[in-house]
Image (tube, rainbow, N blue to C red; front, top):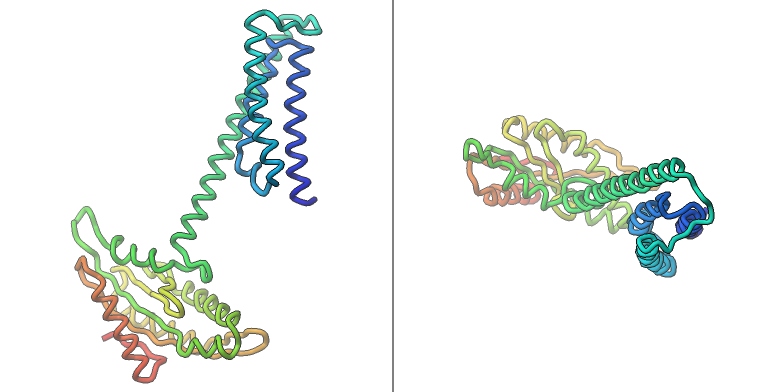
Length: 295
């Protein structure tokens, strides 16, 4: 079923509930509490999940229905308080009370259900926004902003009032422009995604990976990883990528990477060490590429 038909069915159902309350209250009496259904119906009108992907016409119809519900409810209160409401049936007090409790429960349970659904919906949307703010859209890795937060802020230990040590490395794909020029940008995107998958295999236990920008990636290690262990890890990553077969549209693309690394001590200023890693990266590129320079 098309989305438009689903939305139309939802609006039709809401209108049905609206008129059901009118006729039920008229025949059974105001005191039976059918107007409690308007609470849940009004909440449903403004649910983002219900309003999403609706046409402008259905949006306007929902807004009008919300206004009409408020007016109808106020009219019911006015008529009931002035003794002008006369039901068509003489309903006993026991049945009236039973219907009142049932309808009140339906109304307030509807409010609870919709507010819960709204909270879940907003939490999901916030999670998506947080992911967009902290992760690279193409590779799914941490983006530059998130990596900088880890390097500049997350190292700080408030309890001991000091910065922890960290190792950082910048990795560049050798001759990445040739991949785009030879095989197309789709192949370039594929290569970036595959390298991201390779890096993720080496992440965890204090190792964080992310996309630094373009064809550059950042690898960072917390203080539980020694600098020697970190450099050995970088060499394993370099070898893995060198031996990896990047198959794109039946074509095997062979690649290498060049890496520059540096160790950040217990200092608050990390920028000089990131700059040092970048300088070592370019030193490695000038002296043959496909290598790791760490000192």
